[in-house]
Length: 313
Image (cartoon, rainbow, N blue to C red; front, side, top):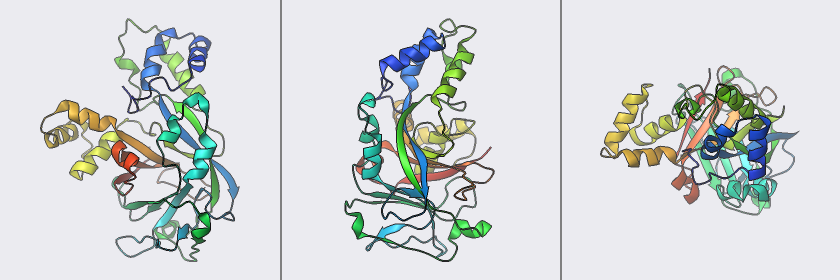
């Protein structure tokens, strides 16, 4: 089952059947049902920061008076990655065909800020995700900073601000997360793998100005984003030996395999940010910045309990 196993019938029935018929792959129906995930694609809007409190990537933040610009452990200003106006996003992703699933995963209002600090390794990057529950954006003030924040200083380049808009969609497992090879081979045909590839390509609509996403499947070759996040959240490390890391986690959960699997199945990718030349984001070798959160922390608004990493091929 997918991490979002509470939503096995998210994709509207007519769309699912059209996909299967178009690609002549009825044998994939149950796999697609079981492994679909909701995601919110984040689309680049206008350049600039003229609208106070609007969702955007890059630039400087609009902060309430009581919230100071976060600093790194070395006392430098953290870099603003994103500020998301949740009421705006909620309005943009309202769509009856998805039964309100996307909306149910996010607070209905307020601002969500993502800041990045020290990042010497790809995993466990210093960061802060801050939730402000207010509704009146007139309480926010633009906090312009003339110098370089910690990630801008690396390349001596200021990150440009771009407004962000949201689009609700559905995603099937990408290359790293696909488990199609584990399906009973008597169920599949010789053409099933190619059909699945074409289906995922069709669903993976990426407009030229897509900048990232909330939820869905993380980019990566190994499909281990949730295992890495869980390992750090509970044990403070990851060894790149998945079997060993899983054993270490199993020991943490007193040998309870079901409890461990439940925990892994309830880690969500909160935000993924693409490398983007227009903004100036370059996550190592044109990679992806990823934030993960446990489902119960997400629903409780505990955004201080997150994990941040970079995937780069």
